[in-house]
Length: 268
Image 1 (cartoon, rainbow, N blue to C red):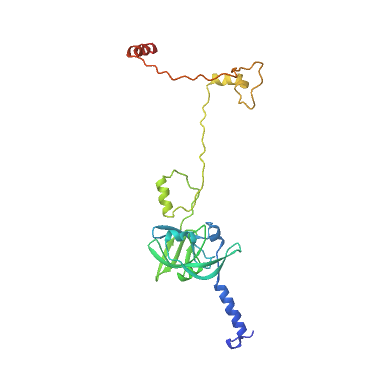
Image 2 (cartoon, rainbow, N blue to C red):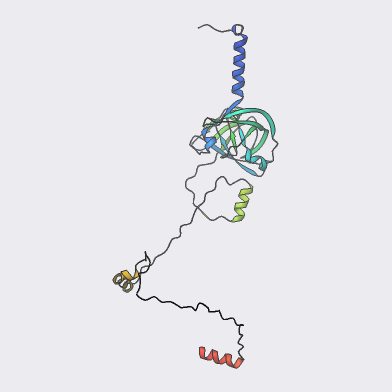
C-alpha cells in the first residue's frame, strides 16, 4: 500500500476534503429518543434548573449536538443569538434548519453549575438535549444505565449526577388547583393525561320475599325494551278549541292569629 504524503495531495483533493469536513460540521443529528421522548433503558434524564424553572434534560449519545427547546425561550428569558444556519437530521430522516443558539446557558443540578452552548430547536418532548459535544467536554464519562447515574468531569473535578428514575404505573390522586398552578409556573408538569372516574354502583340483595315476587312476576318487572302495547281505551283530556286561559290577579290570603292556631291544631 502506497503511503500518501501531503505533497502528493492535489489541490482538488484538498478542496474535496475541506468541503466534506464543512458539510459534516454543518449537519447535526437527533436520535430517536430525543425525537420521540421515550424513556428507554439506555437513556439518562436529568432534572435541572435555570432560575426558578425546572428542565427535563436528556443525555443522548445519539445526538451530535446539544439543543434547547424553543418553547423554553420565553420561560428562561435567556439571550438568543442568530448563528450560521445548520441542518439537523432527525431519526426519521427528515431535516430541519437551525439558525439560533444560546451561546452560554447556565443551569444548575445537584450542587453543580454548568455552562453549555445550545442550538434552539422545537424539541417537543424534552426541554433540552445534551449530545456528544457535551459528553466530550465533560469526559471521561462513566454511565450506569440501571441506577441512572453518570460520572463526568466538571471544572476539574469528578462528579456523579443522579438521573430521573423510571417509575411504573402511578396512583392517581386528587391535586389542589393551587399546586397545579405552582407546578405549571415552574415547568414541572412534563405530561398530562385525561382520566375518567368509574362510578361504582353498589347493589344490595333484596329480601327473599321480594326476590320471590320479582321471580313470579318477571314479565311485569322486566326492563322495558319497546313502547307499551296498544290499549283498547286511551285516556285523553279534551280541550275546547276556542278556550282562553283564565287570567286573574293572585289572591293573597292573610290569616289572623286565631285561625292560624286552629289550622295548626287540626294539622297536629
